[in-house]
Amino acid sequence: MQLSKKTKVIIYIILGLFAIYFIAPFIYMIFSAFKTESEAIAYPPKFLPSEWHFDNFKKAWESQPFGTYLLNSILVTVLTTIGQLISCSLTAYGFARFEFKGRNVLFMILMATMMIPWDVTMIPQYMEFNMFRWINTLKPLIIPAWFGSAYYIFLMRQFLLSVPRDFEEAARIDGANAFQIYLKVFMPILRPSLILVAVLNMISVWNDYLGPLIFLQDRSKYTLALGLAAFKGVHSTKIIPMLCITIIMIIPPVLTFIFAGKHIVESTSGAIK
Image (cartoon, rainbow, N blue to C red):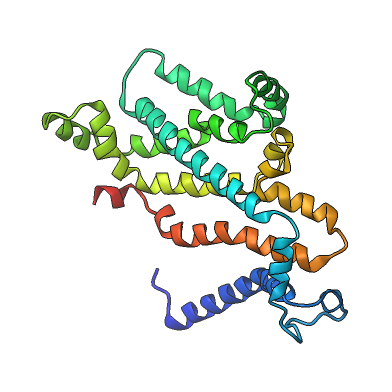
């Protein structure tokens, strides 16, 4: 149905108002980070600071070793994302394009693991990692990601099932083996799914608090989320430092989603094209 120009304008205005309503608290938080403590808690609240204090971020950042926390978070996020992309794409490729006995049963078992909450496996995992002497290291946060995730495998498998077999057969005629087909044919086709998995994993790992809390003890190993929680305990009565560190922490996920948003919504038609 073709909408009139007037109707489109009205729709855009309504959507814009809704967007302003939901983004207003976030904008207010950013402006409040440049205020003084007294001005931040003043009532009625002021939207813009009377005087901009840009050094609030520097003081909050230097109050604890947030540089170390940031490096740990980047290391864990990058390595887990790479591990998820490699392991999940390989597993999804096997389930989607190979015929073997028990394939459906194995896939159903894999999907059944999604119904087991992490709270149930938390203690057995801790005992296992303790036996490997991985406690108080970043290994428990990184290595499990290299064995894949059932949800991400499911996403990629469904994507691969929708790809015509003509691509695969043409590559086989040209002499490509199974791994070459995976690497040179299906990996480019999987690009939208790979970006989606990377964004979802990045946001999940970057904001993960419970995992680092359980497996890490030394402050030098803390991730940014755990460091922020410890910072909150020390500065529970100070609003400005908390706002500054929170804003710094949410910048990477927001930028990742903004730049990857176009690729997330791509479908198989783009790959076929």
